[in-house]
Length: 524
Image (cartoon, rainbow, N blue to C red; front, side):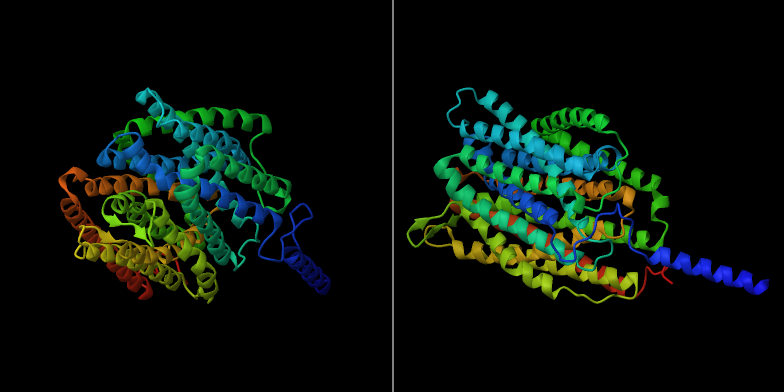
């Protein structure tokens, strides 16, 4: 009798083991053996066209504010900072909408439905800024269409980069490589944007350029939709009818809020403080989701990359604000008898990303570290490389102010060398951050935590605008020598900030390597 019972237990245990190790149920979508599925290709295509449109606008926005709208360099930089702040504040809202109400696929669909009219309306507004007789009216129209575009971008980008992870099986070791390649495609879009901003928009206007890019976005989104069975997604918790109502109401509220922040830049700073408090409260209320060692490691990695990305972003955003004005005012842009547009220099960083993206993806450390401390130490080492390269960019520009030509202008080769250094810096932070905030995250908090990460960039946007306003403190009328001297002080300040960040990353990496936080990580 005892032998029979023992035999029955062994049989049940064997069956249980087989069930645990068997293939997923038939209703679970089959995972593609290759790195790319059709859904992934659609997401990559959507990212390419969306980033091209986004950066085409971003490369020229400071010049639109200062030259076409007559805002002045200081106020224009502050408004641009408010726009960046608004963009990142919207990510958190998009994350909550995705997790609680819409789901990632529906959030992507809402963003795509908003992004087409947003860019087309924005194109019409931009094409008429110079001919408009009522400056206040065209400013209102521009801010409203810009608010709509920022909302759409937040919805599309947050859901899109989260869905990239869903094209691979859970714990697939190729995820970091996929994100580097995803960022590589974004970089190609940023490179194409430089051509669009510096050449196509100048020749053909905004409407033909944005119209073409919108067609590309819609085609890529259709490819994702018709291959949605290839995405590993949890079941929706809200009915289809309710999702439509929530999407409609959310769109109105988001656009209204974005318009308010653009029109009142000071309110963006208050909003950042409110969101910061909300983030702390949200994580505390969901602390039970971070009890397991893997989730605790995620929280550490999330905090590290979010703080690092915020600080890095405040420096990087200077490329589209203070450095655009620097190129416009203080740099001799004549090459081989051709005067380059300031936005043409924005192609340098994307070129470096396109060239180096696949190389760095191949060289990324594939070792399986045996502890969370060593993994986090390696993460901080990569971040220190990013800060080091970005700091060198500003050090080169600072040095350039001591070598002006006979006309008191700085030769364009200095700016070229600086931006060449800034390019690879991004590959050591943003793809790494994308992977860190989507690995080991509690499933029910995936969209929200991603939104929180991007929302923290809002602080960087606000800081970058305030920082860039220092570079515009001396008007051109005071003479080129005074302008260059002002930029020397500004670039020296930014370089000093970068050095401090490098030292912080290196110091924290050494602390993790020494196992100073092992107990907090619950390592065994």
